[in-house]
Length: 127
Image 1 (tube, rainbow, N blue to C red):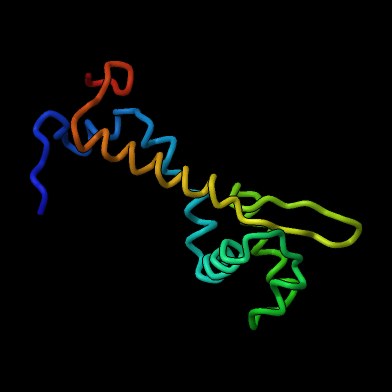
Image 2: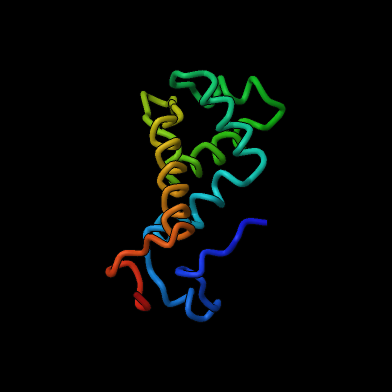
């Protein structure tokens, strides 16, 4: 187990009052969207495709009903994980790989910041 950084150690009550980048980065709606197993599978598929795909194309590669695929892809789009565009009656979705990676990187950086105890004066009430 990693040692606890004494500078940043706090009780749960104290920690709940602290504010920082980690609070912005731990977006429950984002994790809810990508944490659902079917959505995670669809997201992985779109990342590997590397191009916009129609709902029909995505539905053909998995054993899920077209309407369910459409709902899952729309949810991922609302969470900011996919770009969506409509051409006529066809919806096209493309994974935002770079943005997704940056989101995870910024969360990791925010966690590292707290773990290293590099809290700056404007990040929390206790500093």
